[in-house]
Length: 244
Image (cartoon, rainbow, N blue to C red):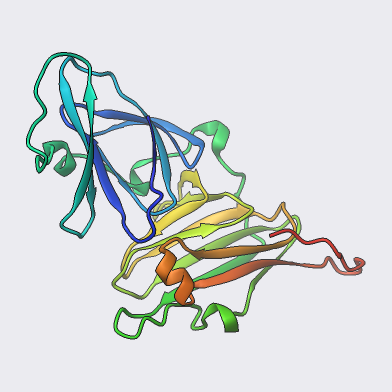
């Protein structure tokens, strides 16, 4: 099963009643296979999981995190009656897979043993004034993050708000760095929780001007967006071709 959160402003906790899921990939990259009862998926994230099905009718539920709402489908493999539409599988409250649970499979680990540059993205704003920013500036007044081709970089997201921010970088993937310094999953979108800090590492191997933004569409539209720009190598001729 491939689970994609295509929502604009809702994270989902998903589970299949009566089953566990063996997660194999996130954002298209393999992870060390890990069993969970449910997955917490931010906007723009994707997870692949293997499920060995039982015999019967089972609700697959996506509970809107922090909201009194849910969606569901039914997996039917045999005889049985569907439970009430409001039924919440107990798996939703058991082992929930989040970014910290997973580790990249060896073939997906990015070589980031050293960093040439340390980048930072401070996520600010409020629901009251809806003035979402990165590093204190809305997109129309942004100061881009900059790298040079061939560099290895760390990027630290610091969430100073009480909202979730699933941060997405175009043109690159990155390695989540766990608090103990070990490599987490390889991704292109990662949830930065309220009042938390999260560091990723990336290789500057795709020159251009690349958007970086919150995947909450309303936060992005209100200003929580910047770009990662490649600066010319010293002595290099200016480039006229940039990709977005």
